Amino acid sequence: MLKRVIGESSYETLRHALRDGPDGVLKRGRQSPRTLSSRVPPFLERFKGSTADLPRVSGTQRKITESEAVKNSPICCNKFLATDTLQINYLSKTGESSSRMIRTEEVYEYDDEVFVVRAWCSLRKDYRTFVSSRIQSCWDAFSQEPIGDLLGRLKKASSLDPGNVAHEVLTHCSLEIPIAINSLMKSSGHKSYDKRFVQGAKKRALVRWVLGKPRALSLLQTLPLEQRGDVEEIVERAIGDTKVTTSTYHSCVGALQKTRYTPYLEFRREELILFIAEAMVGDPAKDSVVNALKQDLLDPSFRIKPGLDDLEEFHKEFNKLKKDSDKAKKKYKCKNKPKTVSSNYRLYERGQPVRVLAIDEALRQLKVCVESERFLLGKAEFEQRVMDAVSAEFTTKDVEGEMFSKRLGEGLSTAYCAFGLRKYNSSWFTDSYGKEWLDLNTRSSS
Image (cartoon, rainbow, N blue to C red):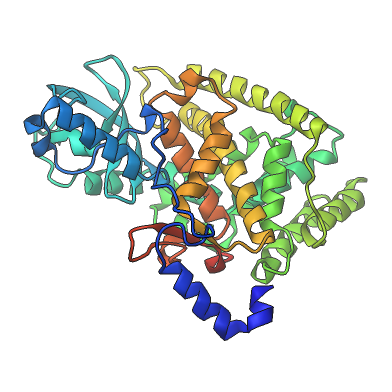
């Protein structure tokens, strides 16, 4: 409305002036909180800086350093899988050094150049997380060759894993896949979450459609021929294992639906509707399903209005999602499995409830911001709101677990990508005062 009143050029001038202003200028003159408030629980603790400095810091000074690390630590992170066996010298939070062999599994890379490795630890006989700033030295566990660039080595290992290519293919269609599954399963008459998945000919059609997209085809070209079949198998298993909650369907529809701000998504909407129509040829429920999907995606007045019944249904489905995740966790959590990145692990990873809920909640809040014409957001404040909403659905023990913030951060990163926000598009940037912003005007359809 302000743009219409004062004109587009004046609006842009004012917008850039506000962007360059001090912290809190967008909140009616009140100072905004720092990256994370002082109430942030200890599960977010991560160090910055060189490990060489840590042993020389006194106990009192170390507390100050950790407090500053918590306050300035980002939440959003990029996750990839990497299989490697390493020997490391590691410095604990208390300053104790130890040598141990680890078998890497997950890597979480943050914008502040810190990364966290999730690995099986031979010393503790369990899974542990290792912060890069505390790894004092590292070498190959078999050849004993020292490793200077650990992150580069892990990224190289990840590029050889078909699971990472499959993950990118699935992430690229992270809005379309849940909507397609929800639409295709309606024809079978199954309404409950337990049966909300696709199988048979409809599953194979969805797999072919996803793998036939230009992005998927270009990613497959990066792999040797013998590994492309592995990608197809992982994608097919992932789609077949996916159960869609009502919350996930609504959040994906909200991000993809037609509004006056999403003309660039028109092709994706029409392509999805056309696929559902073709996949359901001969099905008596085809017309009703396609018409319902058109109403959800193409009607600008469509709104999801939460109510008591919706809330009860959400908790019912979310509890089942947690149970499914626990079952998958028991299957993969075995120190003797032949491959660290196994199919059971991928099943557990996809259904991780913290990640799933973080994606849903972030997409929902981003949609609300666009609808209310709030296109410039404090990034840390937005992510804290998502964290608060997600944390409310878990116990204190869950929230204080070492992996909670990392799963949530990876979910946020996936939600940004699904919503069309990209770092290379300056969708989030730091102003001259050091404050980070999210710019929703930079959304793209890719």
